[in-house]
Image (cartoon, rainbow, N blue to C red; front, side):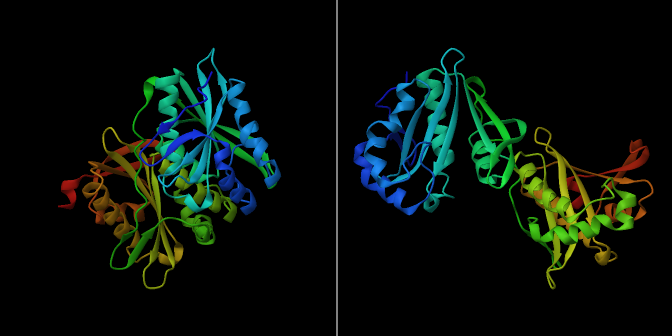
Length: 359
């Protein structure tokens, strides 16, 4: 059973049970209509006394979990966090959390999850904690990854909300594999004299779709011929999830003078153990011939080598794609060889760039 008087101190928070002393704060929260309290919280102020005296504690009394308030240094309830679906035989539980909208973006959820999970392992003796988050809930995905959880799988259409079905990501953390958060390349804006490299947004979808649909792009890449703006918007969302998982990062490159979309550049196959990655690029048909791709690649390479400590950047281009090969060579990449029948049965030229190549 969980301790009725548990109190967990983190750097900025105290996690402790709700009590009748919280009536005024809960009344304010219920009246405001914001939603972050545990399941079963009253929708009307008349239900607050019973909920604080009985309802919020029923989960703990059942032995299946507990609901705790996140309280800041001023004694204000800024969020709630829970353990539930606890199996004492298997030694497992699941964690869930919510933060008041006015206190989001401060790292409270991550801090609370880390504190509660450590307590569950070290004091309670559990061995595994699960965490689930909607695939499109980027904030919750970040909390899980920052708290050290491992992305274990995707449950398709697992949640049905008013706006339709949602995919659900399942995360897990084991007592013996607790580690620092997964490495991830930071979201960074880069600039050259002519270009701005920024995070992709949904507004880029029309230009991205038009670039993919261009006959030259179609001939030199593996993108599907029926690629639409809907695909492009999905790609933007996927890009941020890829970054958070530490496997890559994508930039939209625009002209600084006009703001016009020019190039899409991405790092992929990031190897943190060996500090290496592969780079790819796709220039919009209206921006070709200006040297934009090479300019973007060079500024990314310098950032990767000088700021992130990487040692190798690989680039591959179809043997028939002479334009992409010129970009690589002008950017300082060294041709290493030919990977025969490497992409759809076609030969691929392999290039590499290391820090000394840019000296």
